[in-house]
Image 1 (cartoon, rainbow, N blue to C red):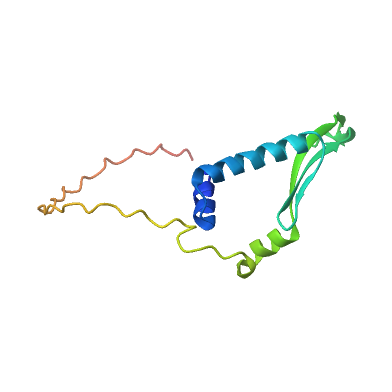
Image 2 (cartoon, helix red, strand yellow):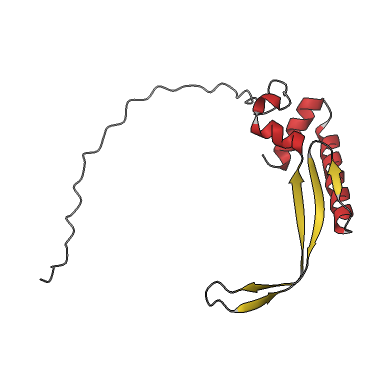
Length: 139
């Protein structure tokens, strides 16, 4: 599911206009990104926790040579699923129920096409592939 599919599904589920859902989703993304980039975690109860993790410098080993190397300090983004989300993913019976046609989307009604009867296509005769030469073996 990509962003467009998510917007369509949320719009169908909530009955809101797709433009409003897209604006809300964009606003959510901007706010969470800005807050987490400043080092403050964002926790959505029952869904996920977004946090910035600062890892200190440490000593490690090169696996090929066994030589000790210094690993510099780094910053990582971490998204941790919360218990309610994990439970719903592991046992789908606990997941929220969506309305009919929300996901997967109902196929759009395609206009009826005229069918033109055609004569069956004739099969071409099978062609033999040339034999491959193999290299002589030394004994």
